[in-house]
Image 1: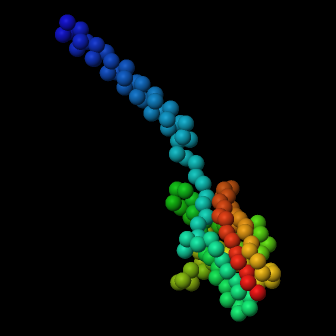
Image 2 (image 1 turned 180 degrees about the vertical axis):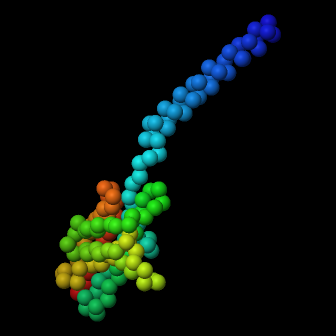
Image 3 (image 1 turned 90 degrees about the horizontal axis):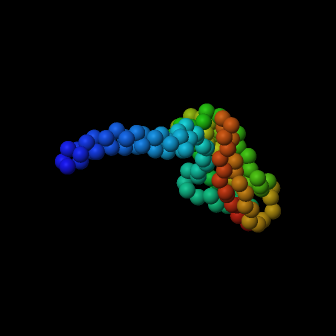
Length: 140
């Protein structure tokens, strides 16, 4: 009886290894093989709220960064805003004066009337897009 048990164990091992290989391969293929990347947009200081006080000429904008999911940064980004009273412009110069092609500045529009504005800023690079929701408070 012992020989039969050992024989069955030897027979099952290669069979189990084949199933493990098939399941692993299927799992990798169903996830796209890890080859797809996406583009995300984040605020450098974590805030998505901007303010503009027209009465005294003070404003607080935000700096945005576009980055690929694989950790790389695009060498060229096209920026746009869904709200006319929220402007976005890139690329920007960093603190050391170097141009940062994956960064942009967003601000409230100086010619817009007082109120609250909500919009989406979109970054486009290498056929991918990423978005971030932002808001703006303008006081007269």
